[in-house]
Length: 107
Image 1 (tube, rainbow, N blue to C red):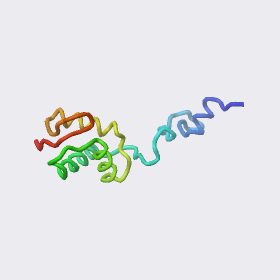
Image 2: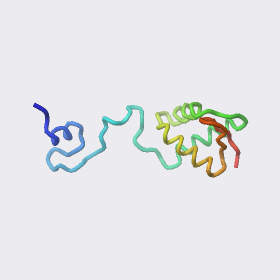
Image 3: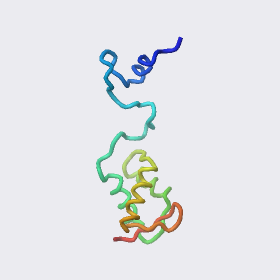
Image 4: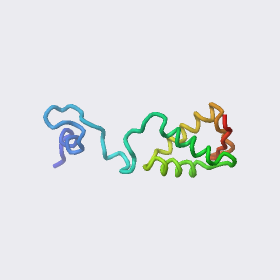
């Protein structure tokens, strides 16, 4: 009636059919536009590039998300962008001026 656990994993491509060894990540949990991995610093550099072009004004996280996605030609998880913003804020390169709003300090 219902497929067994092993059959279910084989259908999803998680386990090799004969050996039972994991072969890849579950693709059904990823957005089709998300790329699996980016080079180290690629997202950070796209964020810094956006701030450099908008250094004089406060920007929203929505603007940053849109710019980074366009710059990298694919969807970047908003949580990744928030994480980088926290790191840049802690390093003094950007200043969080309000919830979801940041300003470049240029340091």
